[in-house]
Amino acid sequence: MGEILNRLKSLRKRMNEEKIDFYIIPTNDYHGSEYVGAYFKAREYITGFTGSAGTALIMKDAAILWTDGRYFLQAEAELKNSTIELYKMGEKDVPTIVQYLMENAKGKTIGFDGKSLSLEFYNLLKNTLKDNAKFVFIDLIKDIWQDRPLMSCTEAFLLSDEYSGEARSAKLSRLEKVLEKHNINAHIITSLDDIAWLLNIRADDVKCNPVLLSYLLYNNKEYTLYVNNKALNKDVKATLNKDGIKIKNYDDIYEDIKELNGRVLIDPNKVNAEIFTRLDKCNVVKMMNPTTEMKCIKNDVEIKNSYLAHLKDGVAVTKFIYWLKTNVGKIKMTEISCAKYLENLRKMQDNYLGLSFETISGYDYHGAIIHYDPTEETDIEVLPKSFLLVDSGGQYLEGTTDITRTIAVGELSDEQKIDYTLVLKGHLALGGAIFKEGTNGGMLDMLARKPLWEHGLDYKHGTGHGVGHFLNVHEGPQRIANSAVCNYPFKKGMITSDEPGIYIPNKFGIRIENLMVCLDKETTEYGKFLKFDFLTVAPYEREAIVKEMLNEEELTLLNNYHKRVFTELAPYLNDDERKWLFDVTREI
Image 1 (cartoon, helix red, strand yellow):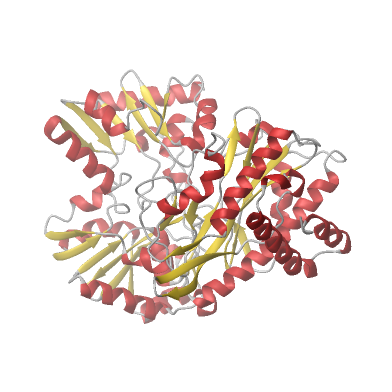
Image 2 (cartoon, helix red, strand yellow; image 1 turned 90 degrees about the vertical axis):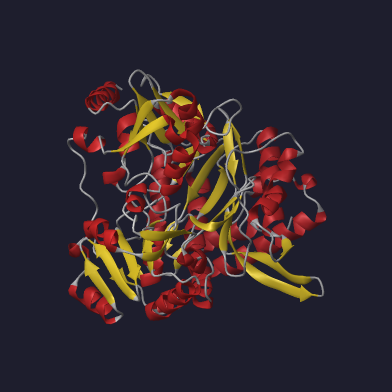
């Protein structure tokens, strides 16, 4: 922890030199990404907190980290003895960072790296504090981070139509029609997943996210991709040029956009504050990137491929569960070794290109840490008792997977069985939902939480997130959560997770997650109705299910799903695995 204290000391020295009273360090890159490359992990560098979400505020004699309920336990452990105070977002009497600054920063100077702060957050600060504070754009971390990693630059490749389902030229044409409809002269796209989807291009510049570090500018029917020139080989450049896309250096966008005029479209959630300040000649139009809405609706080819990706993934996960149950207590296994074994099974599948996120492998009480990331220091042995919670996923050419199974590796308590069944009831209720077109994630969320609420239980995370197609495992705009901001309506073709849970600190954690695709159900005189269909195929934990707690509808949903799991996976298993799967998926 002495290293963190020295970094804080160095940062405060620079703050004093620049006369900055408060310095904000978000979890962000220059593109509004959820997960960031090593170069951009400034918040982790200064605090030691390794979670994927959080904002640090450094002052002359204090420091605070804000993070959400997924990371409370992890942050408490990682911030210990750092002098950095944890503020638990969403908890009673805990102010937001903006509220805190409103109370404490009047008449003071607030600094931050303008490229790493979203325009939305910057505007919120300005509109709240108004003229009561001074804002300074400055990257102080680069001055003290002596061994800072280089920005990632991996070789890009183009995704063929057999996997994308739509040619690059067709996507560009669709985008242009939307821009013309809104009389847009220029459009700046900074979000890496939007660029990857639009150009049918992939790379490996963010771990587990197959994206290319880049910006894309549309200006009066011309496109420019700003990227490290070394990332594109001759063939990729030629193909992009053929489709009318010019290539320029990554950083050149900051000078080029100064010359823009007319109506310029930006997404304030994705564009950074530095870009916005350079658009003073323009009539700035703020709205969601049109590509964000386009890519969340998977086409027929993407959906067909997604079923195939999940079949492959289901084979790997099911083989893993069988291996785990067969060998626990006989050979030494730990949280990390289990995660590695599962990844090796995925590597045996055709067109597997890597994890879609770092595997969460939490045994027993570690399962209660919602986004637990086992390290060499925290890794514990898996013994023949309690649960092992494994949340994992893969990137395949055919699609992105994300699955959580809470696996009984030995004797369970009655409390564990009851809680598992409650989570399963919520999971089945959401997955089996039939709902009218226009229904949003805030409305659907209660289906998953209702069985828990009836027992005075809940969980501190969303119930479902959108998933990209061989892209980011988390994407919008749809989301399922107990929140008023989850107001984007579900539409046919969306792929979303279904993942309720229960977390009992210092005891155990339970989460069950499938990905599901939204499909048409029927159209009646009352309108169009939609439904979900599970993409994920892997057995639930039969040993943890209390049959008496399930009603007839829930039993039907469970048994039908398990019948499908056996039918689809059996051909890919050996005799012993097949016999075991038949037993654990037999009708209850």
